[in-house]
Structures are given as C-alpha cells and as structure tokens.
Length: 562
Image (cartoon, rainbow, N blue to C red; front, side, top):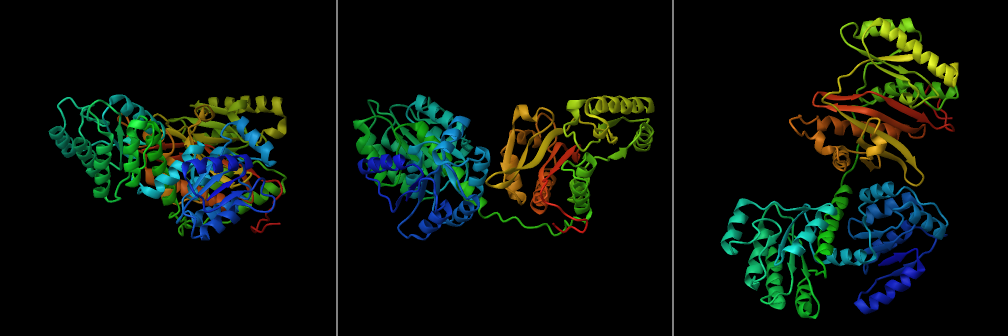
C-alpha cells in the first residue's frame, strides 16, 4: 500500500508503477489530514489481508500518539517504510507551508520511528527497493557484510557506502580465509571485499559466495559482477541462485550486476530466484544497512520498560516542587535539583548551601579543607548557566580563598543582576576529573511527542561537539544501552588507550531511573539536565543539575495536583 500527503507524488508514483510492473493493494492521497490521521490508515491497512507492506510519503506526523500506537502494533507483521522530507530547516519550512502545520524536530522523529518499528529512508526509490528486498530476503542478524566481486573498484565503492550508512565489513574467520586461499588464485585480495579477479568462472563465483555466507561473522553477502571478457553473467547468476537456495533464507544475499543489455538475462535469473539485483553496488550496500536498521527497529518493539520495584521516591520531590511553585518560581536551585536526582537513586556530589562567607568557610572546612580543594557555585533561582556569569569558582584550597571567592561572586552577581539573583553559594568538594568522562543526560519537551531524553558528550562544549542520542522515555536497560551505543563517546566509555571501561550497567540503570523520573513528574518538570555527569571506572557522579518547571501546573505539599 502507498499513502502520500502529496497528490503530485501519487500521480508520479502511479505512472512509474505501470512501467515497473509494481502493484498496490491501496493507493491513498490524504493531503493535510483534516478528518483522518496516520493511525487510522495504518490500522486499516494492518487488517487488510491484501496489504503486505506499507509505504508512506509523510510531510507532517499530525497526531503523534495515534501514529506511534498504530505503527507499533502493525509493524510486528507488516513493514512500514517512511520517506519524510524536512531534515534541513529549509525543507522543513517548505513542508510546513505545504501542509499548514508545524513539523517537529527531525532528530526526535528519528527516535520515534526507531521506537515503533518504522524504517525511515532518504530517497523515493529506496522506499520501493527496501519493500521488495524485505519481501524476498531474510533479515540480517547483524550489520557485517561480505562483498564478493570480480573488480576492485566496485568493491571499494560498496565499502564506502556500507560504512557510511552504518554497516561494516565482515571480519572473515581463519577457516574461511584458508578455504578461499585454496580456491582462488594467489593474487586475490586476501581480505574482504573478496576480489576474485576478472577471470573468475561461474563456479568460482558460486563457491566464493557460499564460503562467505557460511562464515559465522558474516550476516549477509553482496555479489558484484562487472562484465569482462571472460565473464558469463547469466551462468554466474544461475550459480548464485543455487547458492541462495543452499543458504536457505538464513542470510540475505544481494547482487549488483553492473552494466546494460549484456547482463539483463543474469538479472532476470537472480530476480526469479529471489535475489534482488541493483544497477550499482553502493545502492546494494546501503540497502543491506537499511535491512539491518529495520531489524533493530523491530527488536525495539519487544522491549517493554517496567517500573523498578526497588525505586520508591519519597515525598521530598513533591515538596520541593510544591514549595517552588508556591513562591512563583519555575527554576529550581542546583541543590533542589540534586535532591530530586538523589530521590531517584542518581548519585550526586556532596553539596552544602552557604548564605554567608563564613558559612561557606565552615562548610568547606568540615568537608575537605585544608588537605583538599573545594568549589563554590552560585545559588540562584533566576540564573541557570552559572559559568557564564562568573558563578563558579574552582580549586579553592584554603579558608581565605573560599571567603574571597564568596565575596567576589556576591559583588559581581548583585552588581549585574540585583540582590535577588544572589541566594548564597553551594560548597562542593573538587572532584578529580583526570580519568573521567563528562557526559550529559537531559530531557526537554517536543511539541508532538512529549518528553524526549538526551544522552551524549557533556561539559561546556556539549553544544559544540553535538555528540548526542535521543530516545522516548521510559527506558529499560536494553533501550538505555542502545541509546548509549548511538553516541561517539560510547567507544571511549568502553575503555581505550589503557583506560578501564566505566560501569556500563550502572550507567544503564541511571538512564532507566532518569527516564522514570521524567515520566512520573513530567506534568511539573519542563526541562531537566545533568551536565556534567562524570563517568569513570570508579563510578558515576552528577556534578551539576538544572530543573525548570512548568508555570501552569501546581502541586500542593501532599503531592496533589491543582
């Protein structure tokens, strides 16, 4: 079935389908969805026995909850493929003007699609290519591909496309390599891509593909043929078709018979055998990666977050929120924010509030002085980014430094923002960050999907590096781990260059607890972030936290909404 918000797209696709001999169980143009939504149509097509897959051209998602609910249910049995323009600001503006409604964040949309089992593609042709592929080949169990080719150039091109789209080359085992050495000429590539050279016979092709497919590290095989003087495209295709039968649907086999009329018969032979062929090897490699991403998305449907029975936040969280709202505040202090995190078993650095310079000295002395150092941070209900206004003093080593730092901060803040902006300081021990990574964990609202979690590289440069992953709460440990894996810093967290791995299980649990905090208190909390969250082999520690409340929902001290 094909559904589109663009009428012109419908007419174009329909005209193309007549030439390509592609049929549709349903063909729907829904425009701006004034009286119907995606959920209605997906549910209907999910119950339609003639519909085997659902392809969507989407400009706006409309009722996000309806879409998520329907897609999550139908995707178990029928692939849902979406092409959604608007990845750039200019395209998003054009889509909004076309449909008359606002488009949400594109990154959030990607996270939502992953959560409900929907595969998003980038090109119109990919919609129908992936539908055909999913209908003919089994899903891969991993993203490692073996490439068998009779020419080096196409192998290199396919490798670039594979890696660039999120796949990887399979690392063939010693047994497979030994058998290939016995089979192939001495000057074959001796690596993956498996370049079997231009004079490869049909039998050599078939045996090489079979060996690659049998390797446990290989999750799929791409066979590339370029027409050369000693090449028999048709006979080679028959051999690959036989191998596909032997593999028996255990692993996907894709093919790229490059050329024109000379390879047409070979393509037809492969198509009849269920081996999907592509004109270009880079397209084939990208299709394999799409298959793997679809497989991952479907696996997310089986992840059911459950409430952690051992985590029972006390009434202190509700009291903090109620007190702030009774004072007309929407910004919680750092101390209040950390108290909320602690209630959800998220470790925070020791923090003491000091209203005067002498209280700051006393707190520092009882904490770590004189042998170690402390940090003073501005305590304010109106200033959230403390470092931007000189509201953070580091490496204070004695009573005099603590006293002077307090007085300097008080004078500077009061002069720039008034006395009401300075409500004392918090005193904290100076934490050794030498072997620790700075992370950020946060949540903010999306206009269509509600609360969205963020995880990634933290610190003052987090907005520069933009290494982040988004997810829709709540999470379980598997979903939390997937969220972690989607960032670049994940590799460092695993341990590199002699550094030990951090406690991944503890980080997963922290993300799960944070997601439950969001779900429980989102009617009151508008934004929340921990930055930085220090992560090292010794543990996790929230150094700073920020919570901003909604200004329209109120809670009394007994935890009742009003």
